[in-house]
Length: 371
Image (cartoon, rainbow, N blue to C red):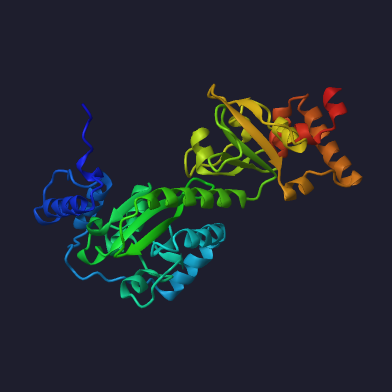
């Protein structure tokens, strides 16, 4: 016997609208304390957060902009995100050209920092939200894809009455959070339509687009070596690859979300050294990138194994290319003396020099290391 779908997954348009209205009556009018069976849990949670803030669903909804000073600050601090998102948002405008949906980009506080797409400026509903500087956080405008995404930190889809305020029931929207190379949320991408047919496929589109933006943010991090990683049964070279950026000393400078999940990194914590993540010396990873070798099977300290491709960045290739003889000799002499003073203990020498063990191995002439 086939298991029936949960109530909120019904795909019949009229039935879906009826179910949303039933949920609104249950939660917003009757004040039920039980989770609604008619909408997804994250919508139910958002409605209840709005009620806890003292909001009432039938009051007029006002879309206020933050101050000009705050807009300028938001745009300034969001420059890396704006650069990474620009080509993706331009592409989205083409994809959605015939749907009457448009794209909105916000920072992590829900302030709009960019809009693009077929926006009907004669429609006041569009002009209210498609403005740089308007505050679309959950605190300001209740349940929307923007506010809910930034609170729940997961992709969402909302249609009509699933928004908290009655005045927002003209909108249908999909949203996905955007995470920076340090694992923290930096904003969100929203696709919104006004009095349009429901397009649940936009949730997949916005999720894929968010991944592209996150990858671009990661690739923009200063790095000398880029690692592409994935599990052994997954082909490398796809958008789903984990991206890991290393500086010249082997420290991670940034990752995309896929890499953070693969390597079990904790968002917001200091990124580790490659030697603490991969069960191979980081100088071997640099050698891999220097010689453009094929994918390498690499163990993690967790006992898991993955495949990895290494590529020196254009700038990194210049940074690690042989310097002038005098500088190279001075550098090597300092490192050699530190190793001698430490009686051959490379870890101790690296600590005294303030560099990584991998850097000692890479910069010390091979004949000296072997001798």
